[in-house]
Structure formats: C-alpha cells, structure tokens
Length: 256
Ligand SMILES: [Zn+2]
Image (cartoon, rainbow, N blue to C red; front, top):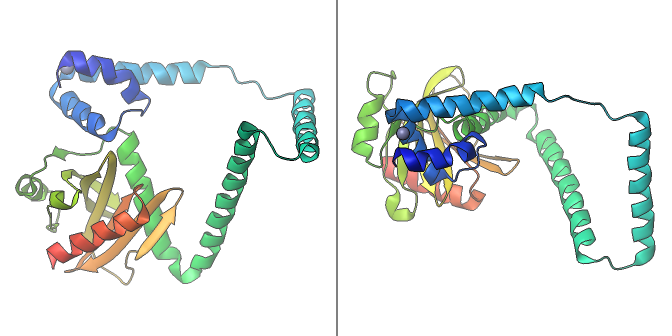
C-alpha cells in the first residue's frame, strides 16, 4: 500500500469500517510510514474532540411521553391491521429476535453455573481481547503468513514457545501474531484469517487448575479452548461456531 491509498482509507480506519484485509494492509503501512501514522493519529484525536464537545440533552419528560404514546398507538394499530407490510413486520421480527437473543444470553449465563465462572471469565477476557485487537488498530505486532517468521518473533518475548501452524490449505491463512494478556499472564495471540474475519488464538502456559472452556459463545462471537503440551489455547472469532470448531480441531491435529 502506498501513501495515496492509505490516505483514502484513514477515515474509514478511524471509524473501524475497514474489512480485515485492508485493515491489516493499512496497519502494515502505518508501521512503516510516520507521515501516515501522524495523519491517522490526528484523525483519531479530532474524532475524540468532536465527540467530547457535542452537547448532550436529556430527553424531556414531555418528549418521552410523546415517544411512548406513539409506540403504544403503533402497537394498537398493528394489532388491528392483521398481516403487516414487510418493513414493519421486519422491524418487529428484528426486535423480537433481539429480545430473544438477550434472553438466551441471560439463560446461557445462568446455565454456566458457578463452577464454570472462572473458565467463563477466561472466555470473556478472550472475547474482549479479540474485540480490542479489531478496534484498537493492534491486530498484529508481526505481520507474516510464514510460520517460520511468526514463531521466532515470539522468542525472547515470552517464557514459553507457542506452536505456530499453517492452515492456509484449509482456508485459514496465518496473518501474524502479537503479544496480549490473558489470565494475568502474557499470552501469544496468533492471528488467522477466515474470509474477511480474524481468528485470534490466545496461547499461554497452563498453570493452575483452570482450563479454558471447551466452547463458548457470546454476542456473535465463538470460542474454542483446549490444553496441550502444558499450554492453554483459546481460539476466538465471529465466524460460525462450526467453522471455528473445525479450525480448532485442525490446529490441535497439527500440533500433536
Ligand atoms: Zn504513508
């Protein structure tokens, strides 16, 4: 990527709107180009200033009353009308779906039970780490599709050596790696790609009795965990859970 291309993408980058491939390419450019990095930081700073200087007005009691009244009127009207025109039906279905997913999330939270609390919080940490890596322009510290470049990069930075596998033949190409934190320990985060989505695999020493959850899902993210060779592994992504399970299975197979 050159500076002209980079300049065109900086605004979308600041808004977190780039697809994964462009995001990675732009980050690689920003690492190498101080001019574009300064421009990118200026855009980010400007966004924060604008956001912080926007006046905020709480809705008045009267406005709230009017909104509630119009919602009630719409609900009554819809109940009388029978079949709904598509957009209204869709909006309702969407709301119903949202309510259902909130309920499912709550129920799922309860069903984990307290003895899973520790391993669930590991999944939460991994979900948060995954989202951070996508938003905070910090997906990779070392960007390479070659595991013989990524693996040595961790040497000297960690007190363990994470296995780095190549799964490009299965449609999960390696993108790179970075240092991250999980369970109070510095972890290796290996980054893979599935179409336009990122997969983060957190790897850290398995000390103590708590293992990562075998699987977990939350708000559109899935996690797959396992322990092997004295290391914990926790893969996180927004790809379909079945694909992440396949990814985790192949990753395990190639490290055994
Ligand atoms: Zn540049």
